[in-house]
Length: 289
Image (cartoon, rainbow, N blue to C red):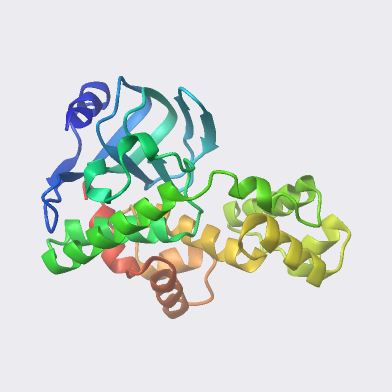
């Protein structure tokens, strides 16, 4: 695929790169890059790109001919980029990214000119889970799991790209002003980013919007597609993913730093959200992967 050579020309050689040729005849490739403050220009992409961030803190700006995106990236965030369209991506900060390149022909009825879905997957959605499972299987040389994960990822990508682009607009018609929801999300983010802060309670969050707890939960879920508790757990998991990039950190250390009540609960929660254990994920991403 030409886009792989374009990416290497812009970002340099990847830490590793592997083909994913089974069970499809159409090519797919998975690779991992680390880079700092880079810009990637794609004249016309000949593949769908699934970009999985392994790090937190970089600012990504992505522009296509018909739309643009600016996003502060967290570990576990996934971005899907369409084929057949010139694009420019600018990254500010220390980035650690896995990219999965998929030929559009392998997604059945979705030809490149019909891929019009949204750019960014939901933070705790099936796409994130599928991409991480494929990464872990590929790095562990588990061909059976890799085959299953690739089938799952292609199916999820196909469904994601075929979905309507106005989901966010529909959710914004909830019973609370968007600023109230944003403030609640900010409180959650601040608590997750501070080692010494407890997670805000539902009562605390509802108080910021000056509504009852039940009304706040209903409105939050309508507008964001997730509950406040699920958002807290997703942010906690993202914090753990960032910490697990260190090869010498223990599961107990990560559990404590990410705010879990015990290592056993951390392992169970991580596996429930991502479909892999913290140890398997750590082995796949620590050091040079």
